[in-house]
Image (cartoon, rainbow, N blue to C red):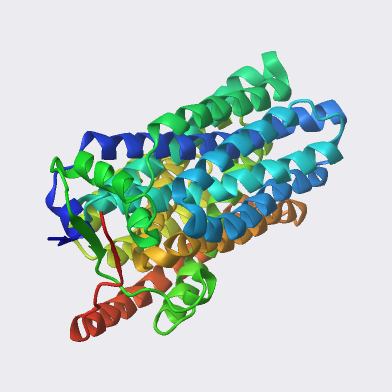
Length: 453
């Protein structure tokens, strides 16, 4: 006789297994490569400018091309992941962005480098949202917030490494050597993922593919052996395409509010990642010292992500992030106020890392649980794509603000406004998601998927 078992209930009841920790580690390394690439381009830009005798404005397309690729990659690969699987798309994206970064090291001109940065961004844009989806679908609900944010700390750690390594080595190996390093490492990782990374159990259950593989994965997660078992998912199947489902019913308003937060949040992060070293350098701070000061932003993001992930599992996660973005807005305004005292300014930048960069990590974790399995990868990826549009605006606006000759303090007061918008939208989302949960309890969803084994 075939027995029905709720797949998520089984995962929730079991302790976190070695297989799940392996998935976290694999995805951690993927987002670390993304963070390395993001930070490195900001620190090698002055060397590129010197070698090719460029004006500061000529660097804007270099930043913008990679971010445009990130947007395109997220839009394209989210639906592909919902259709063909998280594992296959993630591995392909990592291999692709590694190869494109490798080729970027040999670019003979700025135009070719801009094109290759766009192609690198396509791979990165598809990879990072997939790590959030993959990790979320492997984890128990009680630990999801903390462990997804822990995984995503790879981005801030990679950003810190990218900044420090680039600042220390660019003088000896040049910008080409930094890009070469940023290409070889993902290619090695892509090979390792072929053997180390399993497919998402929720995707296998929903798609009905390879039931024996799913049974093996669940056995390694729970420690049980499954025979004549039918795994079910307690969620409705979507009635439209994955993309169309993002705007179906109550999800429409939630999706639009989430997109606004992603846009504003990544605008701040990429503006600071791209231009903060340049801004500090223009104030007379040596590039290497500017690298260490900027690293406090990444360190704050890492510590903030871990702390916020723990708090999100304890209290209302939307309120936790709303307060955190408010802290980020205050810290941004304080950067300009404390500019004449280096250690105070560094502390303010650290606070921005906690309040904005750390919150962005938590936001990725929340975006994954907002959507059902059928459209989860698309929902997470498209939110990231909208966020990348904000990143493009942020990376370009830094150069525009510098051209406008805004004062140092005025610039950071302006940057604080998007953080306030994030805080306000998350407060509204908290109310909206509570109403959605209450409606779900009033009309419980029947299992929408079942596969036989």
